[in-house]
Length: 260
Ligand SMILES: Nc1ncnc2c1ncn2[C@@H]1O[C@H](COP(=O)(O)OP(=O)(O)OP(=O)(O)O)[C@@H](O)[C@H]1O
Image (cartoon, rainbow, N blue to C red):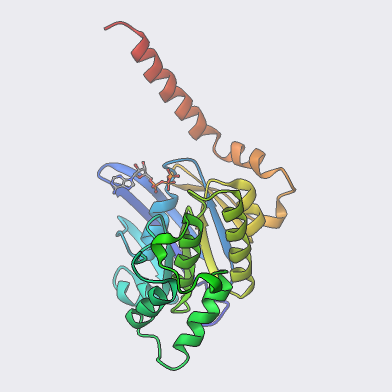
């Protein structure tokens, strides 16, 4: 695969649950080495988009290509090129951090030679060298999140997907996660990150995409947005969703307020 070809190429992507459209005719190219922040209101389709790329759910229409492989026909090959970090850590609490990585290294069939060195490097990269021999059940949420990133990086995936990686993290843990994401991006890793945290998204990502009601409402290089302007652009890009949500709230409030 040449680097001028997108790592992720999405055309005419539609996803509906029953009659409810969640993603509507989405086109998206992600190039090698990009770090894309996916923003958008609740229900705008961020997680659904990541799940579709990861092959965890099937599109209603349209095509998804990852590293030149087609989804869902070549889902197995696509999954082998993806790392995903989501709400579930997928770690084993009764194993140490190092044992967890050894377990996944075997599962991913990593070559024996260099396996232990790679595990040590990754533990270092996510700041867990000193806790490498501790049981994971003794880890804070932030530490588990960092170990999940090491697990996802083990097979050197073409694309790393993060579904709301900051959820449940305190300020210090979130700042540490920022540093790891920025360094991982500097190392050349292609990443997509769904989040609600606008400032962190702009700080960490090279490109910002705002989804609104299943469509791309804004797609811009992160550094093209002046400091403190992302919130304004976000509000403009999602104003109809906010209006709809206000209407829904007003409707439901007035319904509850009116006597039957
Ligand atoms: N398995 C499912 N079955 C039915 N509806 C679903 C399913 N998964 C998601 N949805 C619906 O699809 C819409 C988009 O959900 P999705 O989780 O992709 O949004 P999101 O942008 O990630 O939202 P949030 O920021 O709240 O995580 C929502 O209305 C959600 O209720």
